[in-house]
Image (cartoon, rainbow, N blue to C red; front, side):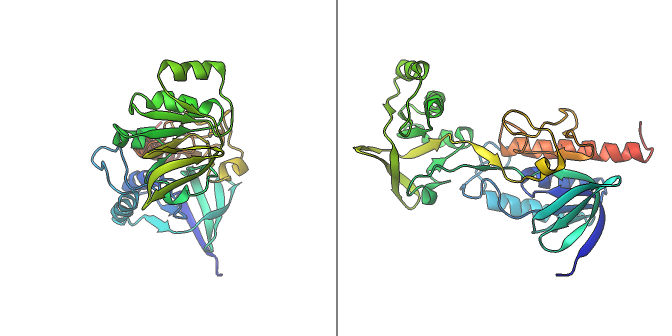
Length: 306
């Protein structure tokens, strides 16, 4: 494979809402940008985006396609469907290599690589994920008002999720998947009238993506229309770790709250990779905020502002 060498202002790693938002702002600032994306967005299984003003209910794939099309207006922004495999500091810049043979140097780097949700290891769950099995109550809880749902998580995680869900959905059952909950968690469940199923979950069943029942080991089935889980998530990329960016106790990349710059000068992050509020609207805002900070850094470097 022949190497394509580039010299650019900004390398954006990740083409989700945060990366595309940053690309839009930087394109309008006439910065030379390469945006690389391996097309594995966190919400690719979801049927609709919720909580995004002006795009409520839009499918994630349609939203991303529209956003990419909008970026084609800006000729200084290039888009490649590829993965960044190598990224390291060089003299006053960052050297990078992509899986498709693209490589070069960038003055600044924006990591918008996002996270990956850890889907529970339960038989039958994958065909239901994004349709009737969900990881985000803020994204999908509204649609389940008046329907029976379950909250799944080991230890106190499922119980805490169930208590929070009670505000949205009256008929909630907590499932701790073969683990015990604390005395305090049990008290809260009882206080809010939430039943607890502590038996191990062995499978979920449904048709055409719609959950119908949860099956337990040596215990009766539970008929439910929806399932929300709390099993954690992980970084989708190790590039921030390889660059030496400082992380917090939860594994998120620590940034300057004003600029989104990391502990490594010239490396910025935006989107789910660094935050607890994991909404598309927040990712878009962070991408724009990081792009403005990056452009201001260039303006200072070139003597256009203090």
